[in-house]
Image (cartoon, rainbow, N blue to C red):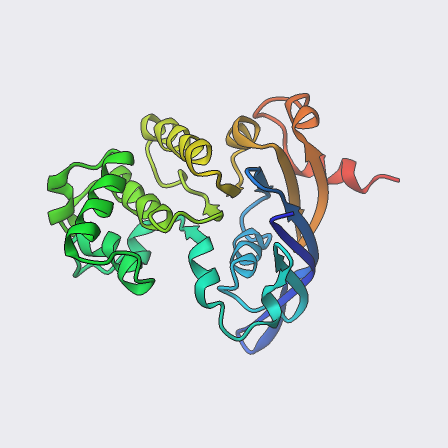
Length: 252
């Protein structure tokens, strides 16, 4: 397994009280696999995704990347480039003062992946083209491009490091329907080219059915059910209510 999480617990303090968001979650993701984490808003999906990337430290439990226990490391070092996030709101992940070029070049500079300015330019231009951005976009700032273009920037920024595992946190939820399909197709094309494993976080059942090799259903901070692709395809269409799936999973 590429990614394995066991018994993840995570709490936050809010309004003076402790709220347990994750209550012993376990899951695994294989190489070149697309796994969907499905559930209603507020059930802990995004927090679990961030824990898998060690962007949030769990209170208890372990996360493994291949055979390395990430929860035991103080600094992920070179492993960080292998584990990337495509956020739900790309505007929040990009410096509004920077031009798009610098947002794409920054990961290369941090990880020292380009030997010189020419090589950096070549890599930035290559990935910009792969996600459908034109050279003119690279000279603009985040506020000067559309939502779809901004999401393409976030995708290029994550994939320019050629990671092995990417968490896609509601990657199309803030886009027009006409743009959503193109973004998903692009992500799946990258998976074929680069051999990436994905965790798609979503509450969109039609998206889950379209991309998932397997799906974990979350509710109330726990993983309540795992569905294989063939089981998922056999479920009712988009009208299926999450509470029906949760109820069915809890039956003896």
